[in-house]
Length: 308
Image (cartoon, rainbow, N blue to C red; front, side, top):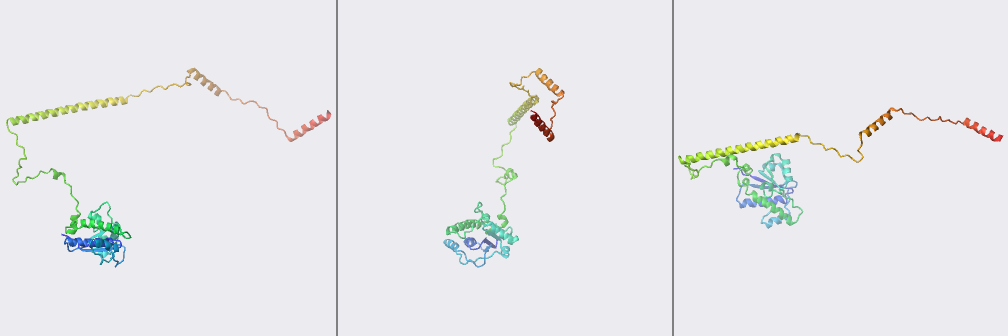
């Protein structure tokens, strides 16, 4: 059976989450007496040689774990190629590992998602800058995931492919297949019914078959009657739909009661008015007064006044 040799825990700075995971997972391996697994840590964006944070050391010390010898490491392609399983705390860690080494695809997983500890919230947030209570919550999330991981077939020693194999649903053939008897003789323990006897038993079976045939004939006749009724109802509905609906006469209004004679007279008057030629009224031509005519008129008036 296959057993992973190197398990890597990834975080951002390799000073909080990954040291917690590595310290507790080493404790679980020693407690379950599992050997041959090397636990490593690495940071996605960090430098080499950083100590674990003080809050991390305090939380681990309360759990009787030690992380004083921890030093941060950078994530490298060589480390990812050597690793059998790589666990990130967030999707950012998984994507960073895949960008650095494409060969790590299939071996990089989210810790909580792979361990199936909390599928509603699959990422573990960074406690950096938080209080001691925040660090304890982060450690509890990592602890629950690793408690499930230590029981998985991948860590115990079975094949990785067996751990990821989906559950097969029962087929119809398996459900309907006859069950083999417990004894090797091939005879059932009183499960089979006794065979029908000759004589009176034969008569009873014949009467049963005749009754069944009579019931079947009655069912067919009732079905035929129902079909005939349905066809008649369909024909009546189609005949009703084909008949034209009656149109009701419109109600006359108070001013619409005109007779034929009045309408004919109005039509004749309109035609006569159209046939008559339109004559324009005679107008007298307007006389235009010029400056000369005005001067002559003034002279005449002055002469008449002088004579008087």
